[in-house]
Image (cartoon, rainbow, N blue to C red; front, side):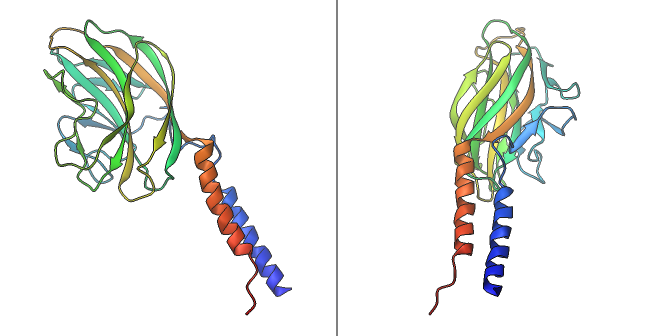
Length: 245
């Protein structure tokens, strides 16, 4: 009787743990700007990570960008300079505590106003492992050929584009399915980025302006199944009766 009771208690504890696995609708990150998040103005190269210039989950943006998160959305205004300009915003997420697998990144594009000739708006996902030296720059003037939204100095931590950069030219809801590989280890991170820029060396041309809202990163069912399977194996191991010797 004591052995049966012990097994029952163990199984109940394992089931309780299994029930704590998030459902498909539970995001690993969500931001609807109903409360303004912390922001970081980046004027030059800045290091990423808690305790550094750009903490995880803060909204970082190019310093010369007219940028606002107080109105219930993330607003990209005109840059405060007239030269050809690349400017971006980025949100870095710590993925050391999540499972590698398939995820969906979604957000809404609002208030879109097209820019002049040779302008572009885009979004990109990046991942990597930050050993404490990850340093990025989110914009520049007079350098339309630079690699943005993220410009990583040589010798910094790894920074890898997931898939490809996608351009947009109007309002709408965006949903991006992607495979996250940098997850589960110390230093792993994911970066969500948006850019308004120019593709030619020119001055006095207005960049596109737009707003971003309802950002989420959600695990797909296949990823949750992996997590659930791990708990299932744990449950089976705990319920297995002891071997009599």
